[in-house]
Length: 145
Image (cartoon, rainbow, N blue to C red):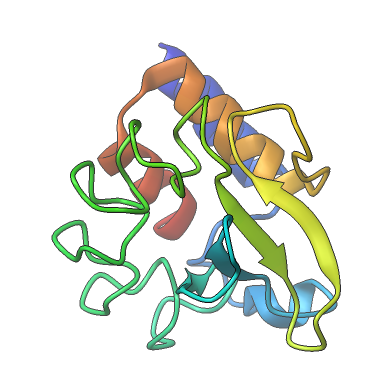
């Protein structure tokens, strides 16, 4: 039952990647993720279309595959493990920096409240993760709705 509430939250916010409107055009710019420590390692695009090579929703790309070490959906990777410093799913790490292509900074995609982004997509994903702790379901809710 919990899953349904956060799937609805993500859908209501218009954050699903399967809609006819590409997310990058629905928002003002692509939301790019970089490691939280130095901002040098790219971790994918949070709101790009699912066929974009850099998208966290591209199942076959480096950033959207749950098997890739570069993916936020890989529980054992640098960006997906709840124990990794640069993972958004870690309470104690820096998480990921959220920026647009012009370099504008939108805070951190992190369970840690320090510097946490106020963007609705980030807030919805973090709340959904806390409610269910299932990255596969969360990825499907974001990307396939």
